[in-house]
Each structure stands twice: as structure tokens, then as C-alpha cells.
Length: 142
Image (cartoon, rainbow, N blue to C red; front, side):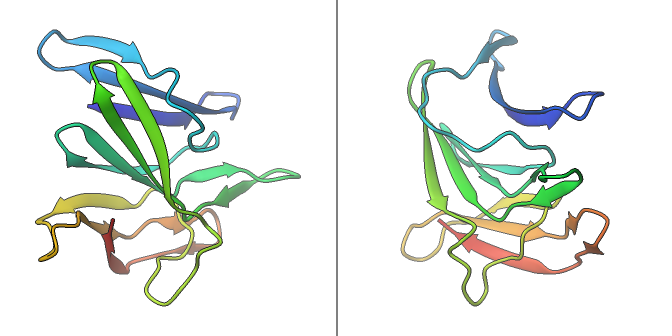
């Protein structure tokens, strides 16, 4: 199980990731994985394979206050025991038809792989904080 980011009581955002080993019930901090997502809260996450997790969106602190939703997609992958690597799969700026709008607090669920073997995830809902709540559904192919 992977836990990423979040905000504390002061509103400070984090981009730390922690992994729970469900065999030993011990937590470890992901370190040395390269450049990963910016500090944010409300990220959507789902398992892609036994050793990887995809993250979509979330919200950062906006300049001047408030929250700025994101629409980027990241993969955190275990290369071997306790060695992890971040990979940016799609940046916010790569908007195209069918790409979900920026959001946080959406549901993300793993689907059966596509016919070509690519991983597929189902993204539903979420919101642009204090602006709009979404009830749409998208399939993300990685």
C-alpha cells in the first residue's frame, strides 16, 4: 500500500510517499526515487501492477491562496526492494480530447488491461475546489 502527499492542519502540503509492507506491517518512506509530483493533497491513486501505483491530479496551494487542481499522471514503480522510481506519464499541459479536466478527490480504480496490454484505470468524479464538482467518468490508458 502506498500513501502520498496530503496537508497538515496549517494547510502545508506534502509530496512524501510511504509504503506499507503488508507482510511485516512496517512503513518505509520512499526516498531517492527522482523527481516526483509537487506537494499536494487529494491525489487519486490506484495499483497498476504488483510493484507500481499510478497517481492522478490532486490540488496544490495556489499563489495568493486557495487550491489549484492538477491533471498530471505519475507512476511510482518499485525497481527492487525499497528502490523506487517516479515517472511522469502525462503533464497538465498535454490536454487533448478525452483527457480529464484538472481535479482532486476523484476515485481511481484499476481495470483489466487493454487488448494491447496497456494498463487501464477508471477515473470518476472529483472537484475543482470551490468551483465545480464533477460526475464524469474517464478511462486512462497508461
